[in-house]
Length: 449
Image (cartoon, rainbow, N blue to C red; front, side, top):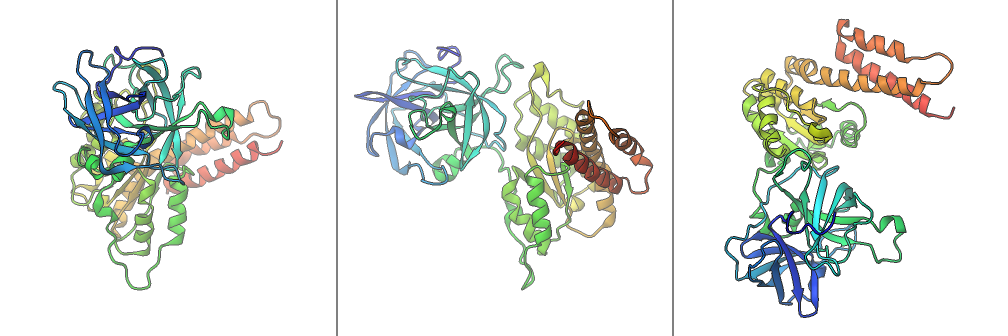
């Protein structure tokens, strides 16, 4: 991607410079506030010139770091490297970045507009968010020739997920470029094409003034983090803690049911695991519609997909087409919903969760009471369909692994068991056992020949 700064301008992209030349980039987050990387500043009291790169003819402004709002990079793990600037004077008509909480980052396609040497008007680079690196996230450019070189520090990392679906995708700010290791001789060559972003939620945690500007509901219900005091001597349920850790790491089926009465050892394990999920909701007392709206709002699909998703979760619309133009828009996110047994209509709430799992969500359902009927309904409406789809995927993997091999094959028998599970007295138990056998089959087939 070349010099398309004017055509693809997001509006909140800033160019920062001083008397020596261009220092890096910034993000306008309010008419008189901007973000940048701390290492862009020559020193904490430096006065910078702010150019509104996507608004030709708009006069520059001045900027200084606000007192106490420069957070240099921490040593280990990767963190920090942010600064909040005061912009004076603010320029009318210049659009600040909309700040909303986003629960997931991995796999997103993003775009970054920086100001490398000899590209004063900017260079746009597309990249993919690969995964966490401490509190930062790794970005890998789509085209190796276009990397985030010097001059990209402080630039916005904006969503480009829907560019092939919608002519004008609503941009979303995921975070800010904070570092690259391009000139570090200690870093292997294959690493030098990567850049790193600090996500918006971490920036907000470091800078309270930014946190006040971030809209949207918190992805995790604060009430779930308030542990109900356990009886003296009660410790964390180690078995459940290990099960939750495996589920959060992607091991085993996508749906996990785990009863955890408030104040119990199991509740302590559940509360400790909340930092492993992107979305955590308390469904106690809520209607199914409210639960659907809360999930849709936090999953943050851009329009028109967000509204379609919410309508479908409510049962009032068709399943949204989340793979238009070949783009992968499913939702690889971990969601915990507690207290569904205490919602206004548990059966209807479970139907919402059942639809949610079809979209690739890993779902943790945490009943609070001891009503066996609700647990059985959760197994029937949520876990059983998810297990069936999961087992079907494992059968396909076994078939692929057995292709071309000699000797007895197990795939046909496993497929027959999958087809017959509905006739079993306890289909969920049968499916759980079948997935265990399929995992053993895969381990054997992937082992030494």
